Every structure is written in structure tokens, then in C-alpha cells.
Image 1 (cartoon, rainbow, N blue to C red):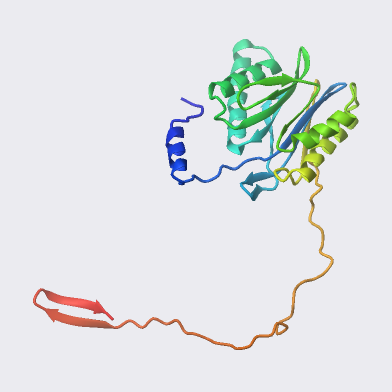
Image 2 (cartoon, one colour):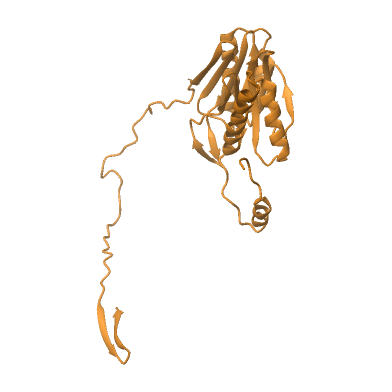
Length: 268
């Protein structure tokens, strides 16, 4: 039976109460956004994944495939977002084969929210779902406990407040495609610069009736630059007071002892 298994949750809580903490799961930290424009939807995400205070991946992909006309951005625990969207993507394919119709965005949203609600927040996945079907363009947010919102522009993740400030200031109805892409990039960059859990590059996905275009690493605001100075020093610059060389050689001597029980070797 596929899916998630939380049978060890009580055991893990008991170990945590005894200060026997399990390793931290890799988190996407994350700023993910989406907005509607005149003709489609633009989704955006940063590319930093963290494990506690450590940057585990500088260029991870947070915009996940659901179907040809639907994509889903994930924030939260990296494994949960990846496998939740993969599971729903498989179910959507089976649903389309069963009904003989193109998948609807609201169907994917219902499947995701029912699964998340069933596990009562144990799956750490905060999602932005966007797509186009025969009824038009739809943009949803899905929270880890299963609640949903449908809005013309949405943000999720640890950098969502900085991104929402950009949308609240500059989003307009019936924007052009390029204007929507630029606004999404600016919102993601606001999360990158103002949130420690977000960083690296900007991924963008444009969904229209004619098709879906994935713009991987559309912007790279954190590229390494050459250092202004060279900090390599030549040998002999640093002074030292004495030099001591120790030889760590272990000498082994085998002594044979003749006893009543037989011969026994002793290492000295």
C-alpha cells in the first residue's frame, strides 16, 4: 500500500522527550509565489534547501509537475513536498485515463487537501497549486493541515511576508505576460534577500492554454564574484618560535610463553 506511514511517531516523540533527538529533516525554507495575468498563470520559487542552519542544496527544484497543464510549488519538508506532489501526479494520470478527460485543477486541489487533512499536519507540505483547464485559470494555496485559499496572487513559505508585500504593492489585474514574470521575480527576490531560509536562484513557470514553459534559473542574483584581493600568502611569511618533529612509530615485539596449556603469544 503506497503513501505515508506515521506509525513511529509516538516512538519518536518518546525519544525526543528523553533528549534523544532524531536527525533534522531537510527543509526547503522557501519563498514560493503565484499570480494570475491576462492569459495564464506565473508560478515562482527560490532554490535553497536547508537542514537546520546548514544550506543543504543551493539549486533544488521546488516547482513540481502534476500534469501538462498543472504545476505545484512546495514549501516545508523537502521529502514531503516532493512525494506528495508525485503521488497526486500519479493519481491525476489514473483519473484522466479513467474519465477520458483533461485533468481539472480543482481535482488536484481536492486530492491534495484531502490527503493533507487525513494526516492532520504530519506531512509538512505547504503548497501553491496553479493551472489552466476548460473552466479557466485557477490558483490555490494548500496548507499542511488541509485548508485552502483561492486568490489572484498567493505566497507561501518562510519568505511569504516579504513576497506578499511586493504583490500587495504592485500586482494589477490583466497584467501582461512579461510584467507578471517580472513581478514574480521581484517577489521571490524579496524573500531571498529578507529571509534566511530562502536563497540562491529564481525559478519561474508560465502556464497558458497553449502549453507550459518552465524557466529554470530564470534569475541568478547570488552568483559568485571574484574577490578584490588575493589572500594567499607565500611560504615563510608567518613567524614561528620552535619546530618539533615527533615520530609516532609503534614497535611490536612478540614473546612466546611456554605454558601447561600450550604455546601462548603475548604482544609487548
